[in-house]
Length: 138
Image 1 (tube, one colour):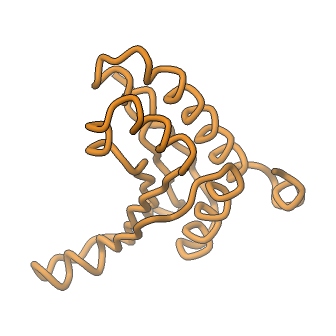
Image 2 (tube, helix red, strand yellow; image 1 turned 135 degrees about the vertical axis):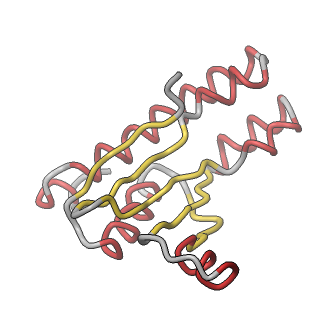
């Protein structure tokens, strides 16, 4: 079962984190949380890992619609987007929002999840576009 969509970027890690936030913002997702797993694991258990950030992204319009249908859907929010060092590249992985519909079993969630999936795909596509096309993308 595929539970995520991914993009591989050839940028510095910090550039990639900033670009991920901008790409998701361009399709209506705000950043609610940013968890630096590298710093957290070092501080809590003295474990060294490669750069790894979890961004909690939320599209307020879609979240509101989903919560109206099923208040329990909040346990699946926000959409997590992982940005992690992957050798010389940076891997960006986002949870497939279609999982929300399948997990809840509520057919009324499916159109919202499909819309969210489309927007996540647009954000990831924006990240993979050549830089000269990124500034003009919406």
